[in-house]
Amino acid sequence: MKGILTLGQFIIEKQSDFPYAKGELSRLLRDIGIAAKIVNREVNKAGLMDILGDVGTINIQGESQKKLDVFANEQFIAALKSGGECCIVASEENDEFVYIDGEVSKNAKYIVAMDPLDGSSNIDVNVAVGTIFSIYRRVSTDGKATLEDVLQKGTEQVAAGYIIYGSSTMLVYTTGKGVNGFTLDPSIGEFCLSHPKMKVPDDGVIYSINEGNYVHFPEGVKKYLKYCQVEDEQTSRPYTSRYIGSMVADVHRNMIKGGIFIYPTTSGAPNGKLRLVYECNPMAFIIEQAGGRATDGFNRILDKDVTSLHQRSAIFIGSKNMVLKIEELMQTYSSKTPDEKAEATMEKFGIVGGVD
Ligand code: AHM
Ligand code: MG
Image 1 (cartoon, rainbow, N blue to C red):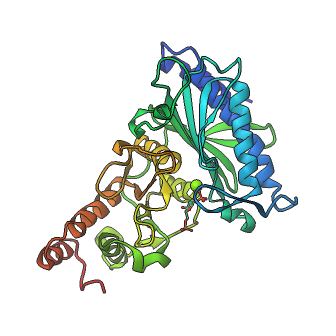
Image 2: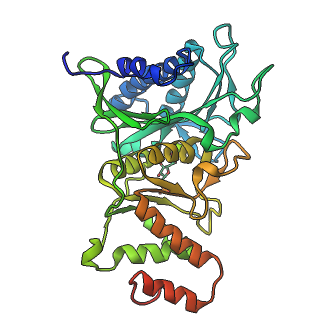
Image 3: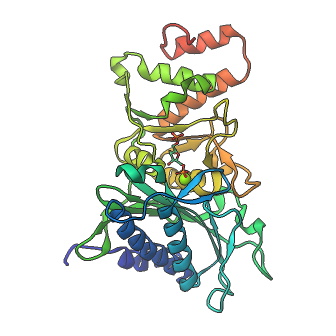
């Protein structure tokens, strides 16, 4: 076993980063790691078992739920309940947040927000899916925790992470002191440190967006896509387009190779599709901790006010310089500036010709 550092060992080692902590956060992370292994086992068996198919219920977003979404949701809630370190779980799969009542959790000071199985429409076709989680410290001081405890800005996260159920299963997390990735070794059933101190490259050549929605994109996004497709040796353009349709998988690839993941507002979804609490804030925290950048085109994701549990947001996330570029175009083309200013910006970015 020489040279292997398991997630459990790593969490204990890192506890000294928080000298006043009593180990609750460490135990919470451990509980999430345990649930992730159980969900991983079921995701791996998905093709073999009669577990696929709609469960028949529609979640608050109006989308049908797959059985594995429900299973993952239950597993994470059960693990957090038995661990006793959090008092509320807010899940993308539940209309309301869930109180974790019980003797063990009555003094718990953490809130967990999560998307238990993101990208679940990909399960049927054996493509990577993920879990996203976010941890906050409770702000209310007495009585039961409240909605206010859940609706905290992304900057208040004490930890966030994701699990990618891919060709390997990985758990990647941050507690605000960098990002570390662990790969599940199925032979010993442990997440082992495989990607220490993850850093997203400042520049990249991969852009990731559902381009089928092009006609519905804001002008700034259309201009950026044209920018990506222009030939320019110095900046290695045209860039490469990659879109898995699982945010965790798309962002994870960009974390390693560099790149940008874009889910903008569209004319049909004026607030964007992805959820601020369950998807955008945790991924933004992780990417920033890895040296990247995450905005909605105008504001840093982590600074956005959170007003409702299932709030949506546009997101531009990944390599710092790629995100800065699209922000500049968004800001230019959203501010209703005259065409001359738009043309000047096109010229500045070396884009020839306009966008229809
Ligand atoms: P989900 O939480 O219902 O699975 O939806 C989120 C997923 C993301 O993982 C992915 O990036 C996006 O939806 C794909 O959406 P689209 O099919 O519109 O491109
Ligand atoms: Mg999701």
